[in-house]
Amino acid sequence: MSAPRRLEVNEVWKSYGGDLYAVRDVSFVLEPGEFLTLLGPSGSGKTTTLMMIAGFETVSRGSIRIDGRDIADQSPEHRNFGIVFQGYALFPHMNVAENVAFPLRMKGMGKRERLIKAAEMLEKVGLEGFAQRRPHELSGGQQQRVALSRALVFDPDALLLDEPLGALDRKLREQLQIEIKELQKRIGISVLLVTHDQEEAMMMSDRIAVMADGGIVQMGTPADVYLHPATPFVAGFLGETNFLPGLCQGASEGYVSVKFRNGEIGRARPPRFGGVPATGDKALVSIRPERVRILKPGETMDSVIEGRVVSGTFLGRHARYIVEAEGQQVVVSTTEWSEATAVPPGTAVRLGWSSDDAQSLADVKV
Image (cartoon, rainbow, N blue to C red; front, side):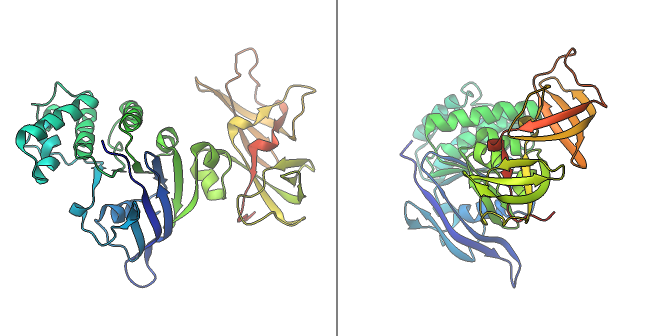
């Protein structure tokens, strides 16, 4: 494989006429060798963005560049991208080796050389013994590996993945997520993934761009976006969270102070954008369930609220408690569970969390 290249999407818009925009002012850079995911619900613009990069959708406004060269006006066949869709799109009348070698055939490479390259790629994905099989003789996971091999065999500038694992069962999907990530690291290819699966994005990505209503709401590492969301949408979409309303009491030492309904003052990280709310303004704090603790007698933390356990459920890897607090239900997830220490329903408890684990949000409506 040649050295990976830099893909730059700059202020790209997609209009279908009038004020109907599928993509609005999207900008990002896929760095050489990076794994970047466009994550969002249906209608967020993520697939349309990918299709514009691939050349299957025209760009209404903006530029798409590879190492500084604008390719927005080029047809798909003149863009050097490997693309894998959910449906695989393998040729049923060709065997595995012929499917993988097909892009090389279209580029005019001789039969012997393209079959050698196809064999090398099949070995990289663990299918060296399947070259003579037809697609219908393969499992879903094996077909996906063939599709990946075909997308990589011609040394593309980047690999574009559009919900590639959506048709597979959960166990196989998780296995292929690991394999694709390991393959990407070995080859060094830049990857742009489109998915609505939050766990898939968290597991595979170097960075995640969360999309909604045609635009990017927030971009960052999986840990940054998950632990420090910018808006209530990001907090709620990227996993489960607790929203606690209160009133801003000012800011100091890099934190926002929030007065909760029980009168307690807690601290949280300031909003990612929009500035710190004025004293007395409404505030909304997001805390992930696994960051909330049921405190032992005499134990204290940065922020504390009182409540009463509604239910407790053992789920194998963790236990999940529902606690009535602050006039709402607060979810607590903990791996510190045993039959002897389980907290029964009806028990009065104190919940606590660290200031670094609490994120105040922008665009608050409470």
